[in-house]
Length: 427
Image (tube, rainbow, N blue to C red; front, top):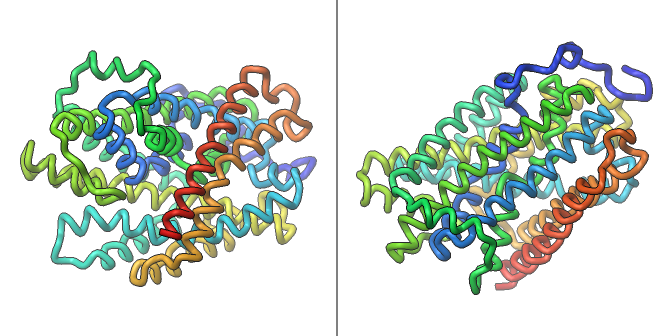
């Protein structure tokens, strides 16, 4: 253990930063985990309703997440502390919020992720019941994360990202987009009736709680010192370029394939099943099935990312609550508390796969979840402007303006999400 309670640098951290083309890693994990079926559907619906008018929102969403994730990564590298250590230094109130949130979130998200991954499989193999695929998806994710270290998890995720890229971007290329129309969407404008779509697209591009897992994946990668700051920034920016390509491709599909033809799709994850049907009718059954494989890859990458990254966050939370040293083995990948949360994500949510989500749980999930992104943005502003971060790595004026705007945006989005959650529950 190094001086001041900080974890001793790993062997990987003592090495020189990797070459430019060997540095993609943790950022890709955040991006792949964050771009799930729900985000793709939100963007698809925006393209369906408004054509290219909200393309600028996709760019804005990527910029918001780059700023937020860069702040989380900078804090982790500058202090060699986890984000939860930073939160704890701000007071007990952070644990009072985060503890119930991560427990309720894991219970509901576990079922949601399993069902989302099962939908394309059930469409490809309709003779197999949906719950069978849902439970199998959770169990396979459980086994892969339980027995894999970070390097193995990173390789599997990279393969899934490749599948997503080929299918989602391939769908956009098939539609032969009109380039001048695409470029016109970069001019900011808010069509009448589009404000909810603006918020859902910008807020959904690239993840929620998994953004906070970035520092943990930096540590697992071996990037655990300020000398990796430049590497982290390139990794983060390139990851969200990939994310932007995914989401722009889906907007193009919505604009060219649905908007121009006046077609509508189902809401929720089933919207991608509707899109697969449209692609099958337009370009042949084979491509429709290929797209379903991409839908599966997007959903399953989210399972792997959450099962790994959020389990690390929970293990860190419990470790600090029990007074364990910051780098205690029980709080790392494969440690006791990591495995406890992995079990929690996988097995109790199976109940929801069969019986649905009870109203009180849905309400708690919506309320607690709505406040996470403002919580992350505001606490990062606090951490990166005070003694909690070494002075050379604190925010400058531009950083404060950027992160301040991010915080303001997510406060507005939280109000909208809270209203939506309450209206869903009350009908």
